[in-house]
Image 1 (cartoon, one colour):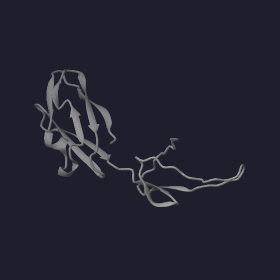
Image 2 (image 1 turned 90 degrees about the vertical axis):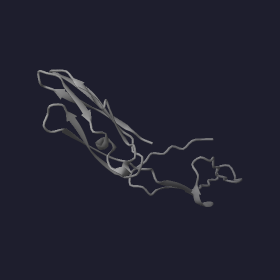
Image 3 (image 1 turned 180 degrees about the horizontal axis):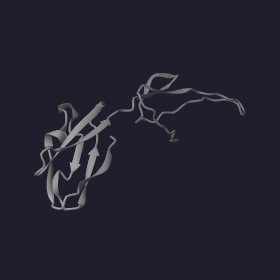
Image 4 (image 1 turned 180 degrees about the vertical axis):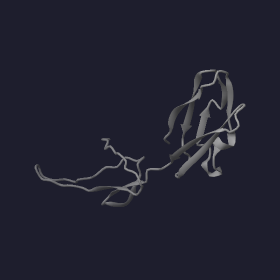
Amino acid sequence: GGKIEESVNLVNQEHIPFSFNFNKESVKGDQSYGDSLQVQPMSGVVGPQSEIPLQIRFKPKFEKSYNYNLVCNVKKKARPLVLNVKGEGFHIHHSVHHLSNPSALLSADTHKLDFGEFFINETRQRSVTIVNSGRFNFDFVWKRA
């Protein structure tokens, strides 16, 4: 499956250090999301007039839209910081068909197209159909066996 990682800086503009920690339930998100999001570090201290990079890794487990509101509690602050993270999980829905075999060909198998016997300079052709029944474009490559 696919994954993406982004970096966000937590900045302290104060003259004293502050500690922070992310609410674990907010990182989990909705119960149906599975374990699709990770934040590193989940807690720590940001020194005065400095910043710390946070790594946010999204690896969707299901084909659906995701929307997280990450709650970051900062010590001695009245309200937490909230970071909204959105993403979408999707599968490639494809099939490959050949006229001599109307059912979908399996991508793990090697398939041969038999052109039979024919004379020099004679032309024959076979049709192979690639079907994309999903919502996103995809690339494909023909490989010789």
